[in-house]
Length: 547
Image 1 (cartoon, rainbow, N blue to C red):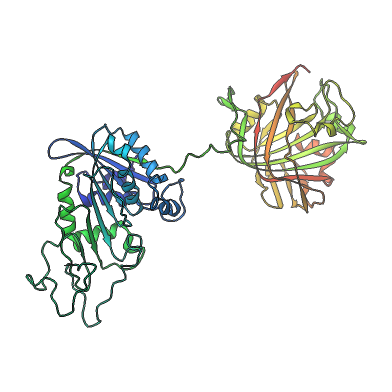
Image 2: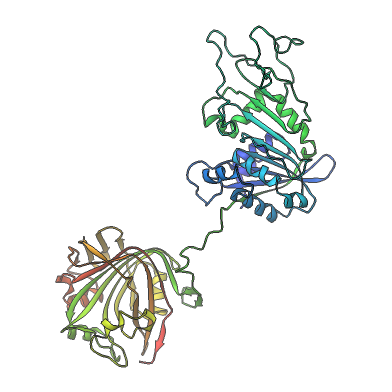
């Protein structure tokens, strides 16, 4: 995962503390981290890992930077965020024994501190610095005692100061806040109002304020640790008090530039070996856990490539997000038999004295052959070799691949060229291409094919759950019959009382309109409707039968 052209113009090309924080601001909320190779003043190339904090809002890329994982990282070193950073660093190819500085903001700092506590990682690499800005405090050490820890905290930041220490007393209205930075008192000693916290310097600001300090409207005294202290913790009460505004990286950058410049100078001094030109910059997108492939396990099936005139197609064809409605009509058996292909041994399955025709409407929103709509007219047919009465009822108890009966597709219309080619060349179905619009996800169905002069619309009545409608489908290729199996996975419902109707224009296009009229479906009401607002399906390759 690289950087955009605009981001490359913003990312720092020289190593510095503020430069690394600006890089983090560029990546904030995008699920990415940045690794830069920096050539130091001694000519040695070192590595700086820069990690943003918790991604705002709902994660968009299965990110590990969400609230739940941020909370888990506070108590466990083996968090998803830390693991994903470790995988990214392995991809970067950092050599064994190389020196690294880890710079993080918010929960990113927590993840990097956890990484510095990993003994195996610290055996392979020398973690020299962990710099955490706006990060919750932690009492655990690092695997390498030589690792320098730096924390910079705005006391109004509720993420970094969860115990509420940021609620500092406000100065009286008559005393405006001083723009200077003053040192803080020891936590166990409160300063007296009449006592100057630094009698040797009076009440003038320190030109080089110490690391443990606050930019506050009041003065707080505390003994200054030296710039080489480990851990180095700088606390200040910045002018930005509103949360979450005070937690933003850009606010910390501004405070380090104008409010506590001494802290910035101290950290830059500690990172002296990382002050130099950047020789490589690489961004990595983090992932949370290993997610199964889309449609797993139903659509996780072996595939094979089949050549077509529009290019190779993988079969079975997989539909990841579809809706369907099957309108079932009792029709005259003689009229249905007259519409079956000539020269075949097919005969319609009878339910009493009638045959059953199915008008199937599909809305495929995501599939391996692209999104498209589909309308198909088919007739249920008996076993090609040993037809028996009521075979269709017995076949409902068998698996789809073991069924002897099926549906012979009389007409098919699809809205994309690739779907038309696959239907004709792979499944042997008489497909035509036509624009169509389908709305099949609610109880009110609507399917329109304007060029064919066909509209299906109406409201479904009450329904009951039923098994997924797997189908055996028959087509024709030359003088042979082509058999394919369609397997579905979803929640289907059977509707007996519906108000769904088919309308044909006077000049409706052949062959579908003519077949519907010969079966008198254009004036009939469906006996029942099988609906499935959302389901997955895969359709096998066509197998040529010698009949």
